[in-house]
Length: 213
Image 1 (cartoon, rainbow, N blue to C red):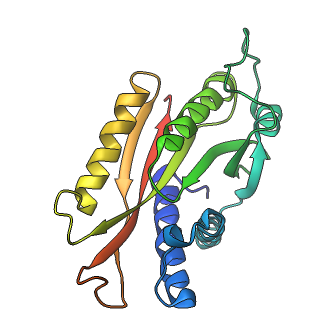
Image 2 (cartoon, one colour):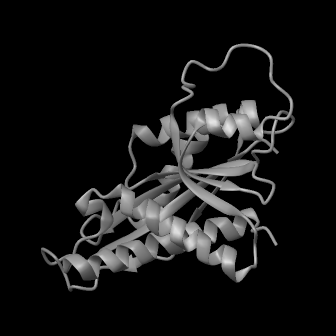
């Protein structure tokens, strides 16, 4: 049975937490954001998704670095007229694509290890994909932008909850009426190596699901 959106998002959150916990052990204290290894977060999320597929006996598959043209070629059932958006490049890639057992794409995932304006550009690209390969033109149903966030006890103005609210507000303001948005925050991981500079540290992930239905 295919995973629904909430199950996909849970698997993403599980992958972020698992990746940070694993790398903290390997490096004796660092998280993925500290090391700048966004690729590890991608692989850990992909692994978590595959485990979820297996648990639910889903015949879905996933791929890394699928290009826009590949998604378009397999998704489109009715070609949309007019020029493609200026930010559309056939060779541009998404971090993870989820495919149905009919070999047609159902969802795309973009991953960022921290908040930046690049997150907004990823949102624009996902909306462009949905516009041309989603309902009624194709099989793509939604996209997810995943963002890692880190909070420190010494900064009372930026708790995990406040960072999540800030990301939610920025995303909704940027998207406007172009798509539906649903955000969620994963389980929080506390740094297990004691205080650093007499402060405690926490990290988690924020997921923004974008859809047009």
